[in-house]
Amino acid sequence: MRPLGEAVLNKLPLAEGQTIMDVGCGAGEATMQLADRVGPSGRVIGVDIAPRVLALASRRAEGAPQVTFVQEDAGSMSLPDRTLDLVYSRFGIMFFAEPVAAFRNLHRMLKPGGQIGFVCWRSVEENELDSFCIEAAGLPITIDTSPYSLEKSAAIQQVLVAAGFRNITIEAHDAPIAAGDTATTLKVVTRVGALGKALRENPDLLPEAEPVVRSALAARERDGMVHLGSATWIVTASA
Image (tube, rainbow, N blue to C red; front, side, top):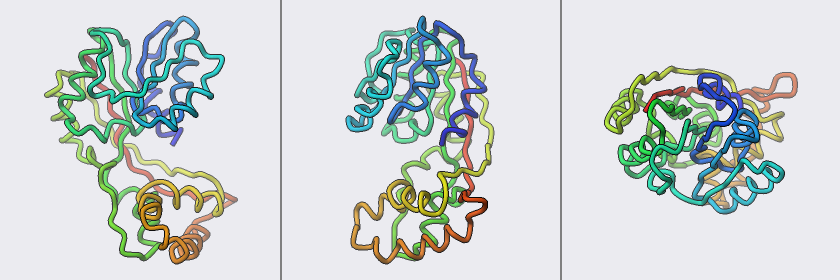
């Protein structure tokens, strides 16, 4: 996912000394990229609701005093008004139960003229990490559509306008993503995404799914890498 997140980073006016929030920071990879950009005089706040990934993130950030991790819902957390220069998210903003209220809270925490930038998925049909692997498995699996809550650009525009943002840009971004060879990719797709979620909930399906998905991925391997197509929105807006 790193290249997809960097597509957003490259559009933000990052500078030393800024205060930035990383929404849905997970294990902190992007948080550390932000920390490198703001330097020791800046501050990066990684926010996530999952304690286990935050524990990994905290270990990753040892030796980076400008980084703080918080276990909270960014959509309702009570950071003071006008604290942030930037809000960033790599696939962390699609799960808000009340999107307008959540983005309004992010807007509240931004300084006047501060910016938000995020990447989110377009439709499941356009994203092979889910669609290709589910189809290859050939099992009666229901796809979890919650990661695709912002698949329509009109929905993003509507939410951001209602939350008070302006200068909104929403750009389609298509790019191949890769985790490694067939064996590595198989480990990834059977643990994360729609297929991974379904197999975690129905582990008895794994022996049936694994060989056919491995075969489908092997057919896509070139030069030691399996590439799957991704389709995202790259979104920026100002407070």
